[in-house]
Image 1 (tube, rainbow, N blue to C red):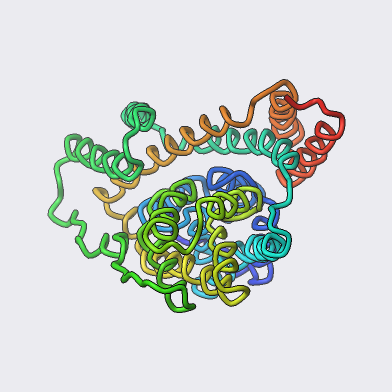
Image 2 (tube, helix red, strand yellow):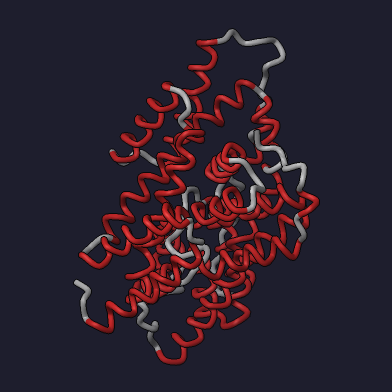
Length: 388
């Protein structure tokens, strides 16, 4: 059940800020890695949430538009300290990536190039893969606790592998779980889910703009943040359609460089908006674009966060959430397979992934230290010329 922990008052805003600043500054690898790291610190190390409650929040983020891992941070902040926690956790998670991306944008404008940091990600991604796999293994018993949910999870994995849209798989799994629930137990008169409970989960309409002024930059990125389902991996298509094809604000080359910076910096991939905003209008543009793309996430979580316990309390809505939970885990597994295929490319990367898994399982090493080890190993392999 995803209600706030009764000990939430013992979590200070300072502790929330320190944790999410740390996560925002050290978590590489995209949304799957961010979710895994949050589970490590919020569930395993601090016990702020159970795996069941954590899964419900992950599913809630998958059902609303915007950056999933940022929305999960905002949800966790709300669970611990309500509205102040919602704001602190979200801003703290975004800030490190925004500042680093802004600095790289300044260097890009001045020197017309993006610093080469391939060796860094070469070492970090394999150990992050181990963290993600550990999170999936830990969440699987709760998400797929019955034979029916295990079958549903397998079907979701197959559908994703065949190219089905992520949102269709999530809602399809939820509806299938409702059908199975109703087949097992007759519906009671008081078991109703009002359509208004799901209204905040639907994307909001947004207007389009034409000129690269600060208001228009904000409008474009707020629109993207309001309608983009899935994760940062889907962001490229939206950016290309809006900024390159429709408005001509960026060249194809500039977009590729912006996406590359979003991938090599820690924290949410959506801070690609910071880089693009800087290219369009300097520091003011960077701030406006960042605010625009992340503001909808705060609004959607503020609207949907209080509904999660109500969804879980209703047997029918709870069955829907169970279906979405197992589909969310399937989505995380599918992303991990793709990440693994792109990451485990030679002997050193495979060795790093195995070392990361061994350190996590045998010594319970903090995942942040794994990132340090991976970065150092990547630098060493790069220096010695062993990669390839």
